[in-house]
Length: 167
Image: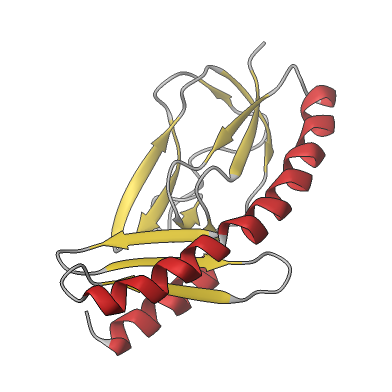
């Protein structure tokens, strides 16, 4: 993997809004972490064959988790209150990082609209990741209460996409 490919990967991660991406290849491991507050990107590259090169990135990697853990704690606390308010609803979350699309193609209508009844296995949306379009199917039956993401928007892993009323 050359420097240009790494730079393109960093740009993609920054656009997607992901907080962390790990990539492992034969002789290279790359971890890209973006801080939600300072928008700083850190690249850690480890090459097992070169002992001297692997040590400094490990030092950087050990320093990063502490700041990354601090923003997650308040976010988790903030999510607890809405979860209690909307306890009767189920949140459908993104299983992957990519670009969210509500429609199968630009000239067709959305898979689901607010108020639509869905059943387990219905396609709710597609998420494009690395030029592959992944259909996201419902794991619950119910009624779409809210669509939380705009069409053609980047989404990250575990980001809420839809609110479903299972009753």
